Amino acid sequence: MEDPLEMDGPISPEEARVEGWSGGSERRSEEKKRRPWWLKWVIAGAIAIIIAFCALGVYTVDQTEEAVIKEFGKFVGTAEPGIHWRNPLTQSVEIYYVGVRTVDFVSKEEMIPATASAESEEIATSRLVYPSIVVLSKDALEIRIDLSVATKIRKDKLEEIAKTFKNQDYLEQWKIATIRSAVRDVISQYDAEEIYGSKRSEVEASIHNELEKRLSQYFDVTGVYLRKIELPTRLKDAIEAKLQAQQEAQRMQYILEKEKREAERKQVEAEGIAKANQIIGESLRRNPEYVQWYYLQVLQKFAESENNAIIIVPAPSNFYPGVNLTEPVAPPIILPQQ
Image 1 (spheres, rainbow, N blue to C red):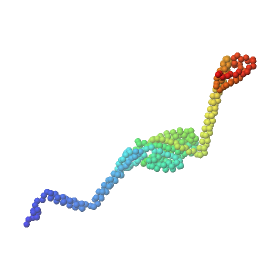
Image 2: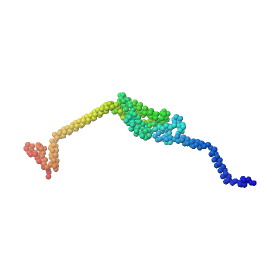
Image 3: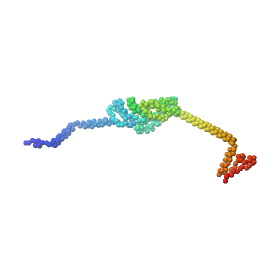
Image 4: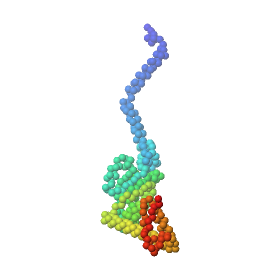
């Protein structure tokens, strides 16, 4: 009896490939069955960790900010505005606001609306509100100062700032303390009356200069504005009364000077008129015919006027040529020309 394998004859290449593919699929299927069930979860978890690691390292720096990068707490550099990546395991990032920031020292009445108006994060970042600065003047009087100071962090000092202060909050605390100290030192050089009155602009300029010197280590001072000076009520009333009296005295002095100049002007005018009359009188005494001629000219104008029908001239008539002054005569009548 023949062998069944020999009866089938040789296997074609196509049949061999089909048999090999089928055998390979079976082997792969058996290998999958032999793999641990938790392996795919480990792979998925590893991928998720990698994605999370990359995402945690991404951070954004705004156009008004500058980032300070530290590695294991040590300064390594800064980052400008834009999107950046850090190693979340070894590096930390601290964001510093480098735009213009205004610090307002105001009374309690103004603090509530000022704080309430800072609803957006941008306004809150660019403006800080603190109570008024209480100082003593040169004459030992208590004064409350409302002040606004605008500053900007110097970018070239960020490394020094990062090595000196833990974060920007500590830097701001140093700035506020420095401002208060500078204002107290400046105000102590002036009397209360000078601060409230004649030297207010000088005080503001002195505060600005002092702050520039003390804050220049880390900040550029862009503006100092002396908003309000609050004195004790009795002193304020006394100063205002004194200033009002001075203004009244100055007004009266102005009126007196004005009247004096007006009297001098009138005197000069009178002297001029008297001098002119003297000259005219002397001229008429030397030329009496001129008065007669002028008198006749005036009568002639009256006669030519359309509003006069009859003109009666007064006596004596020595101004009329050919008239005998010794004989009584009736007042002459001059009729208008027809």
